[in-house]
Length: 266
Image 1 (cartoon, rainbow, N blue to C red):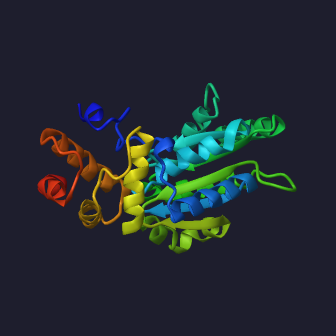
Image 2: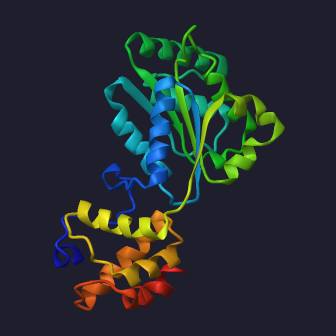
């Protein structure tokens, strides 16, 4: 539909966390570099940001950069008991029949970590949406995973990601042991106005189009509607492309953004 009209090979503002479409703003580039360092050092990292700021996409880009010497296990919905959490990790590490008791599960996971270490593989646990964790004991299980270590290094890297309220959750006194283990804290901020323009052009170029499709006044309007949050930018831009296609517009200006304003602010 609108792809052919604008000379695009694919949709430029998709909702999936495709690393090819990761726009490395100054903040995203710094976050990715820090995450790479933490993974190499086999430490614990905390990455926070508002909904739609690109945390999940960053984790996918991290996986691509790390290569075959790293084994990632992703936990997308950590709203579970500590036993369910450990079983999820066990399945992620291809432990065929995870044990039913916590002690036996920990033995299995420990054995797997040593096996990966001997094979030259660094396991990385990524816990997304960590602000939804309701069982404090689960946070302690995350901390205890880093107890598995040799004299010189840990056997596993851990990346904890979530919305800003996760930081408040970790400030509670029972979280102190885990908080002391976190070696890197980083908060992703929304894009600036200038970065919003660069983001729109980058996405269009990656999809096979030409930059400049969005006029400066359209970019200003998109920025005000989205507050610089990439996921919100994607929603506004997609609707704008549809409106422009329907009205045979060659470029997208502020009047088109105004047309989609009511729809995207529901």
